[in-house]
Image 1 (cartoon, helix red, strand yellow):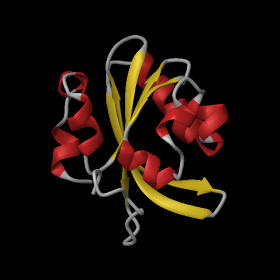
Image 2 (cartoon, rainbow, N blue to C red; image 1 turned 180 degrees about the vertical axis):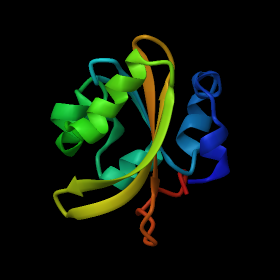
Image 3 (cartoon, rainbow, N blue to C red; image 1 turned 180 degrees about the horizontal axis):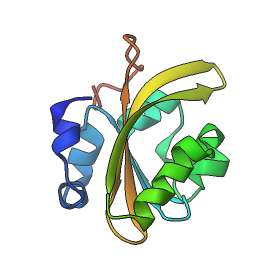
Length: 134
């Protein structure tokens, strides 16, 4: 994971313009505590092969990425909401319909009801990104 992702604070993330958000060279997903997707950038859309408009307002854990509805992913995020630590980095295998992709995830809890999921591709192959997100 790049130093840039590791240095970003919740305040940094909330202050990004829409253009900056979509230009980030890694996936960015903003969720409420129940898992409803509030924001989803272009890099993540390309990585997951899902359009932004298709996922906004849906539940990340049950409707968009059900492979994350497990203790090692969703459970860890819930621990962060409840505990004093508000960030966590780990590797994870995302199971997509076309295959498994190894990613590195960073959770950043912003408030009692908002968090960020930052995703980088661990595999050497890069996602097929639109020109504006590359």
